[in-house]
Length: 284
Length: 257
Image (cartoon, rainbow over all chains, first blue to last red):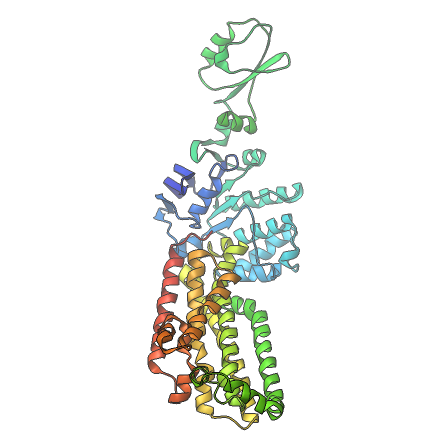
């Protein structure tokens, strides 16, 4: 069952495109990776979900009910980490946590304490003195401290050192085991591959593919590398790299063999591409 | 949220309140000696102006501390309080947007109406405290000078509250429509004082008094009647409700970012 469903979301900025006819869903207890290049519409989609922007059309449902602005019951169950965190500079971390806790049911401060310890966050510091990484840590704590059922994260680990990144992944996996669902927008395809159950790829405001991470990285797209003195079939869109040719192939493997049969091969390597390559494949 | 907004206003309230406390106290301390030395010179200077103008600006008797309060003192108080209120109004919700913190606040399980009402209540309390400080300083100054008509002066010094509340709501509304700034606050507060001056210049320009919220605190008519004009109060309250209601309505429909 879906915890979050977006149907035919449309958002424009005057004449400029935001997102077009975007539909996706986040299932209960899953981490859905949301990837795309800058300006593809990831943040616009997220901001429409959080009702920070007014959508032109489309519907957004949380646990089957329309997610409307001012729906305090629904938003009490959602955590949000924006890509850029702007906090109240004159507050300390501790005051910020107290202020955030005032919006939620009791108990969130205990969870915040635990998260501060795990992420090595010094809550005594004034927020204006926080580095980018420490600001991100606080953002993560604020998004998770009220034990939300859905967490929406926009670039969750950017600016964090590798050790803290690993701790964040561990926290997210634990939260997932508790039944929390995530919409996880990221540029870091390695972490998407590591964490996400499914991946949604967005390009120029349109969702172009949603598939289980394993399906994207195994099987459907194949990296083909050949060494030949002949010119390979242009239909395969080979890219020359020194004395070898490389392409990402999607389609009938028999047709691939037929195409490859038109030239004399010195070497043939067929392998599974990584997520970065698949991502680029969908963009080119 | 109410407590946080009040805490955010603390410094501004302290600065504006202290400024008026010091300025007004200083005037009450030095005014008697200035008047003792220069009363004749000032009277000669005032004689140059037409009587209508002096009546309009309530400057017929500036030799006494209450005379000074009713003329120049109230102008400073009104203009200073108007700028303070306009700044609070234009920053109320705009500052969160400008600083980017609205992305934190607007995703909390709280209605937009609740955000704007709690913030506005804290701001209005700050404006009330500012007015109270200025009013108390004037009343104590006049009491020490043995020149206090308590009921009338209480009405005179508290009447600006309505002007401040209306200007606050107007700047709040404009900041949601067009984005707020110091420029907006100064423009609105000082701009609306111009019709007051124009309306007092001649009978034919009297209609200008209906173009500005400053008319809601008309020292001349309060002194003449001995009490606040109920119609003016009702008009002020109605204006505030319309502007504040409009702000809530608009804020609920605008994008947060």
